[in-house]
Amino acid sequence: MNQDLSILQLVLGASLVVQLVMLLLLIVSVTSWAAIFGKLFALRSVNSKNDEFERDFWSGTSLNDLFSAAAQNAKLAGPMERIFASGMREYQKLRERHISDAATLLDGARRAMRASFQRELDVVETHLSFLGSVASVSPYVGLFGTVWGIMHAFTGLGALQQVTLATVAPGIAEALVATALGLFAAIPAVVAYNRFARDIDRVAIKLETFIEEFSNILQRNLGAQSASGH
Image (cartoon, rainbow, N blue to C red; front, top):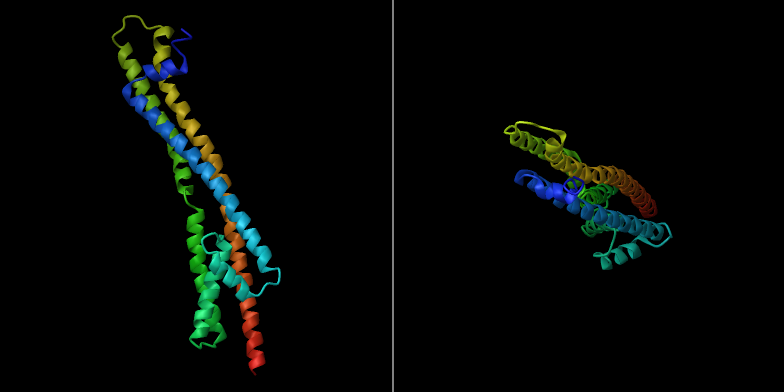
């Protein structure tokens, strides 16, 4: 009896539909864990690069030197450095067109940084929707497998003259394995989704704060240049 109700025997003894559901949930679970570890390392890298650039930005290095370094380090730069580079690039393009209006220069740089911010946020949020889908759908997929398995088990029991617990238990246990796999896939995805959503919100707030601070610096520089011009 114990051997018959081992996990392996339950999986092998399940109906084809339940086995397909189990296989699907197993694939989803493995993919989900891969996405979790990938996102974990990606967010650590993003935060590390942002912190490093922020230290350089407030260290007193000139904006032109930071922009030159960002242009040379474009492929390895973090989101904050790329946002800064986008703003400086647009700012310098407008200056090269001999646009001297401070509001136009500041608005152009701010719009460029906002566009870059949205692109960076889309990259940071990669695979987050997948984890959300796994978290919400997997239990229902497992439940479908369980319901189907129980239906299949009771259909088989209908032809028996005498039904005992020993005859009912294997079929129901086989079906319940699908629910267990659904929860096994969903629970880590729920925890990871909530954790990553909170971490991404912090990254977004930090980037938005940087955009405002850099805009203020540009505004002060334009005000100083305008005053010296007069």
